[in-house]
Image (tube, chains in turn brown, orange):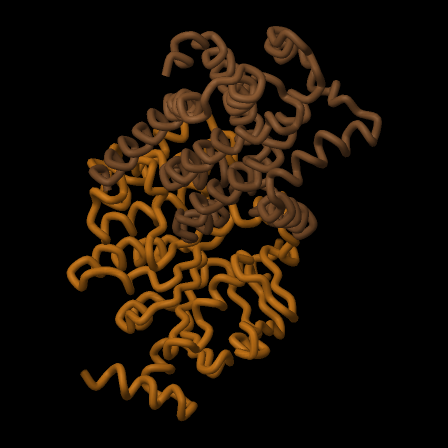
Length: 235
Length: 248
């Protein structure tokens, strides 16, 4: 078990990288998922079809395949995902010793994949708001956007927040795949480094990695339980 | 706009829910200041008729004009039209996350761009008028059904509508609360508001309506002044309906 102490810095580095990509992917997926959800409930049929198409593709493909497309498809199209080199984001990317585009590819894949589930979690919240609320808002003359903003969304987030949390927890665990797509040094890829290259026994390394993931996911799950309990009391 | 020109005109309106012909060639015109009560057995299409007037239910064929303009398609123009037609629902549909006063001021502030202070003042006056000014800062769930429905009427009136649609406004109420809602509606009617009221309250139809419309199986069967309709229904369907509801 000495590996946990001797190589603590490797685990910590892996934890840090995984946390970074998860925070970025969660933000990206929440934004994109919200946009897709608005498309899916929009009164304009082509927009609705677009949203539905998006969800049908990305919810039903394995994440591995989405990652393959990001990591091999984007370069084939001549893109290194440089469009993600935004000022604030770039500061985070450059903290990585090797600024390979794979981090960006992995981020794109995680965001695209998770956004489909975020969309459905948000939509289930919207569907939980009685139809009469939106009807009353329409009959007052509120536009679709005003209706969402002032009437539907403020009531839907309560029903959305718990499923959204589950989506984010799943995303954190899904991020373990990025090591297989060229991102060096995330939490799960640390296992490969320490066992194949470092010669450490697998089980202690796996325990260390599990602890790393649990540190991220367990508090999030506990938070969701608290929110759920509070809602149950309020109801 | 001539005074004689009707405010709401439906002409040959048809609507299907799947195979169900829920509105079958309905033509109807409602004059300014007129109170039209729509009655009929459940499933006769009367609620649907009411909801087509502000296009909460789109129709399959025929035309509906409001204030001389055909109903626009979904979008800004339709939103503007809806803001001129007040609607009161069977299940109140007050915004559950907003106080009673916020319910009443949301439309004026967000749709009409009124100043919040002015909308608030007018909202309080309306709540006073329907007799629930002391409930202004409560949430809908804290009010009785009758109070909620009166708040919903105030919310619709806050838009200063040209007409009011009532879709079974008392059907979800406990019997002792029906009167307080009908009182508000009766006073509205006497002040000259144009109203289309779907209801089972025959008393209201008798004393407040200018005309009674009887619907059955999606068709407009009778259209007569209340005294005439209740005394001498012409159709068998109406006779049958009235005999069932008036014997108890």
